[in-house]
Length: 483
Image 1 (cartoon, rainbow, N blue to C red):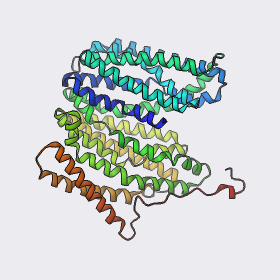
Image 2: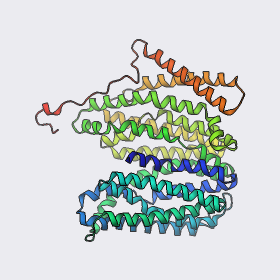
Image 3: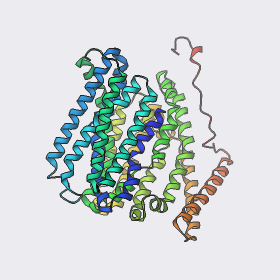
Image 4: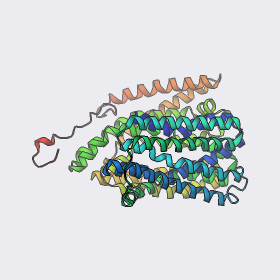
């Protein structure tokens, strides 16, 4: 249930985009998507990642102090939100300059952010208190509330003002509901010491820095489009995002191996950790690569069907951003966290962000949406290579042995061949978008499945979906080693 709640939260942005592009005019969506990008950045950065710190400190304090601790978290985040609102209000005359809408909307955006930030504490409080079902229900209900109130606001009051009105309404409801939830779930007690909150901040700051760099990395190319190609910001906001399914698969694939990886590293079983890692990257290659390639193949039809033909100019950026996901056959940070190399995560994110600022910025200036997308693809490749070097160091092997290269490259080659055959076949069919989409998918699945089956029969080719995950040694048979 908890995973379902997290999936609902991650899908909010895409669901809102799908609905709002059909309610708002292109100009209104252009402005709204720009304001939503600021909202997303502010709610991630402004949270200070305190909610993850709650998982660390809540189980370590007495039960009667937990309500006070969480309420102090909510109060702190509310103060941070008010500070952000004041900054946005002060910046209103300077920001946008009319290129992306009315700057007078920024104070209302600040209010929406201030109301939303405290809600980040509620779900993690419930998780820390081992109320997993309640946490999932909070996430799902909160997501539904945000979507419904935003859509209603956009319908009743045109443009970005209606969307912001919906966010303010949902933020108010979530703040009141969060306070009620904390007050009713956690028992009343004494005041939590300031030292506990300070300890939580010290724990959360490194995580918050990494999250800040990551969210900026997701949005910096969009903001360059706001500067150099403002008229296409709304189209680029749709095109320049990952398909949620492709983003979730690596995390889902690694969930079952996290405990095994941590145990292997803790006991010095580096070979076992490497075997688990290679098993994961081999098996997921046969899932993520064909799915990503298929989405690239049907991108022209998919954007037209889901977002209308007005977004056809975003096909190439969308394909390029989906191309980036082909290498994400695992959650690379998972292995580094399991190995205790959390500092490496910040290095990888920082290098990727720096590369993105330089390459996407230059690309946006030179070639608009397509140029920014190409810059982001190259920056992502740089970040991937740096991550693999750290992973290789953790596994004590060269980079060539730290990833299932043969299985991945084979899947890429077979999927590319299947996509070419499907595209050529579909080009002979000119009767309707839906028909082309169905033909492309049918031909792609048939060719890829046949190609993968043929590859498995080749001598020396380990099928990427038939590798048996190694088991950790029985530590009970080894005296002196903790089980």
